[in-house]
Image (cartoon, rainbow, N blue to C red; front, side, top):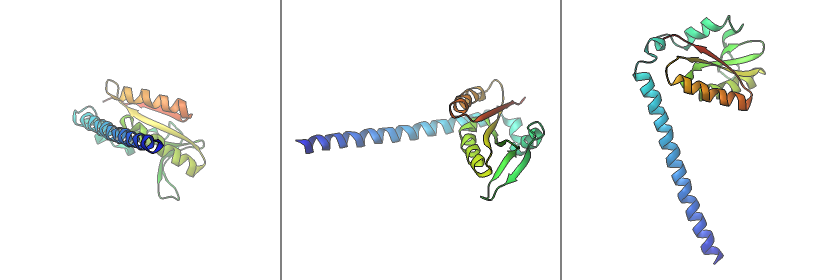
Length: 149
């Protein structure tokens, strides 16, 4: 009897795990498609011509930071100040920015920070709101620069 119950539970677990994995993959693909549509609809078309490096250079003096500092691990910190290792990224890639900032913080022995480049009137407002939740929950400094399109 125990064997039958265990087998039923395991079958159920495997089924729900598979449903979870497929659902996660579908959600991930939907978010990627949303990002692609965001790029294709022209919302950032003018800004995309000015790549991140343009804005890294532009904002370095404001944050009193050095630009593109190469680390021993073969990675580069976008902005490195006396206090923060700052990852600069477009708002739609906020989730990548936090991961990179944490790594750079560890490698530089500085506090991690994220600087998001955002455009009003786009889905960036949602991305910034989500980034603020992460920033608050994990105590990671968040800067947002609202860029005119």
